[in-house]
Amino acid sequence: MKVLSVNVGRPRPNPWKGIGATGIDKRPVDGPVPVTAPGPKGTGQVGLAGDRVYDVAHHGGPDQAVYAYAREALDRWEAELGRALPNGAFGENLTTSGVDVDGALIGERWRVGADLVLEVSCPRIPCGTFQGWLGERGWIRRFTEAARPGAYLRVVTPGSVRAGDRVEVVHRPDHDVTAAVVFRATTLEPELLPRLLVADALPGEDRERIRRRLEASAAVATHDGPEEAR
Image (cartoon, rainbow, N blue to C red; front, side):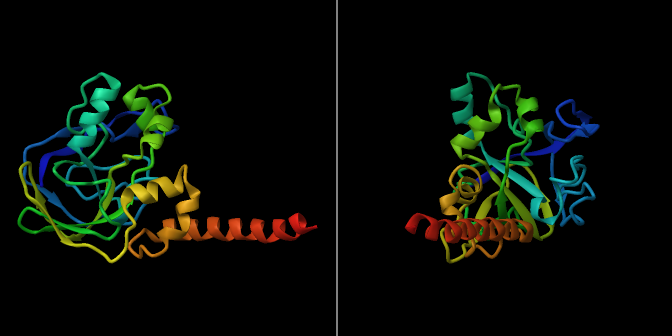
């Protein structure tokens, strides 16, 4: 398991959202690239030196410090879309080889290279910028139905990363909640939501959103029950 490429964004205009720029245009760079834990969400900071986000309300911060996507998943998309997708095409910071990114457990930790330790926090949710960048009609729906979201990671131990670095799983939590399961539960399969609460490493705002959805569903079920009985 290894890092195939390290990709850093360059700012470009964003005509797909009401913000001036986007950092989704990520290109491979020579390493090593320093990686540190970013400041709070809303600052635009991410983990890799030289990179940043511009949609600060939805991206960046400690729980979205680094985005990883598997080269194997990109290859599947190349075959399905009939077009080339170079490393970084999905806006990922790390394009990996041999790593089951979608099947990684929330809270799973990776040692990357000699000293960097990352922790899987949540899946990527597609947005209008992603659809506009890919230029594929109906892309958000297609990406969602495929449930190959990749994973955001937080920085546990700062370090550096470069292409060719080995990825080693050094911790796997005692549950079965993967990045793909979280993605499916929070998009098209809400019946999976109760499974997610055992994943303590989910971002706090995500856990609170899940609780609210479960409470709302329980309230509806409680209200509807007596009506059906009558």
